[in-house]
Amino acid sequence: MIRESSRKTAAGRLLFGAGVLALLIPAVAGCEAGSDAPTLQFHSASSGAHAVQDDITITNVFVLGAPRDSSLPSGSSAGLFLSLYNGGNSSDKLESITAPGTAASVSLPGGAVALPADASPVNLTGPQPEVVLNNLKTTLTGGSNITLFLQFQHAGQVRLVVPVMAQSYYFQTYSQAPSTAPAAPAASATASASPASS
Image 1 (cartoon, rainbow, N blue to C red):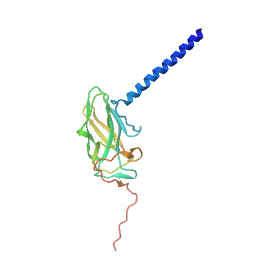
Image 2: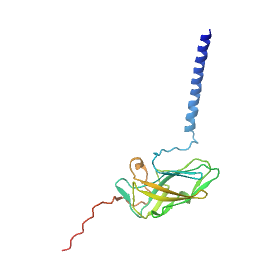
Image 3: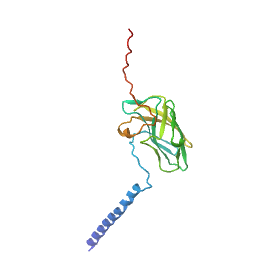
Image 4: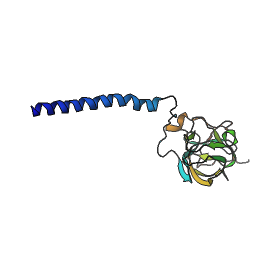
């Protein structure tokens, strides 16, 4: 008699657990599929520079270069991609970005990027560039790095060394910045001979 009741209790627990699990699966799935859920985007772990300043987290920062075996010439534009998150209790704003020695100016969407307190991340992550390095002062080639300075209203200035990613593999679907001049072939080690005068 005791064995029979313990079997019924174990079976009841198993059925109860399965019922709870069946109720939780749609609820958990709904958290991700709800209309208010933020859009999630995949980025490889090494797709850019990262930094934290005060309550601002800056991730996946990179410049999109030309396709492999070519470069962006000086005078052209380049797209800058990044994600920003304000985990603090007060709002902040990305006021400007500068790239001394690399670009004459850097355009931000709307002139500045608002960062509300403890809200969803602001993803300027493509595939269309929203932040643009204008009038490059130097040639950019995939695999190189540039230095950027991000100026926040409250968090202050952040210096980042940012990689230039070739427009290939994972980044092949990303778009070049508007008004980018055609990519120039990578510099060759051989020089052309000048014709001899007769």
